[in-house]
Length: 99
Image (tube, rainbow, N blue to C red; front, side):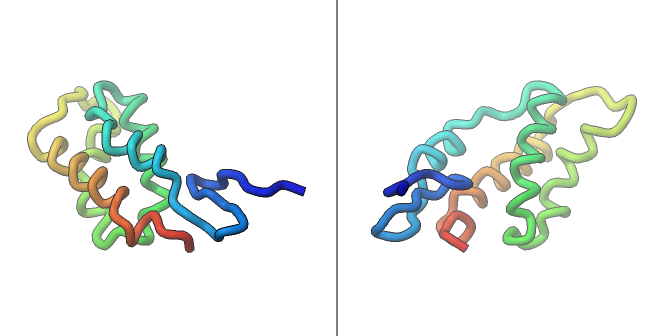
């Protein structure tokens, strides 16, 4: 029988469910997206948590607009602020506590 492990970024053990500190560290050190592929990856990760983030679609709109067809990838101030806000909301305790 397994004594403990990591499932969806949470440590599960005999003591209960805890947040994996490595996941938080990775998110805090995450640089802004530099191309469409990295942006899609980031937005794909945040999709799981969108139901826990109030006004997620309004916050992510500048980033989502960069994924439109024939739009040049340029991370302007609004996009950078949206990225910082989403990244900050992903590491707060209310989002990453065990469900």
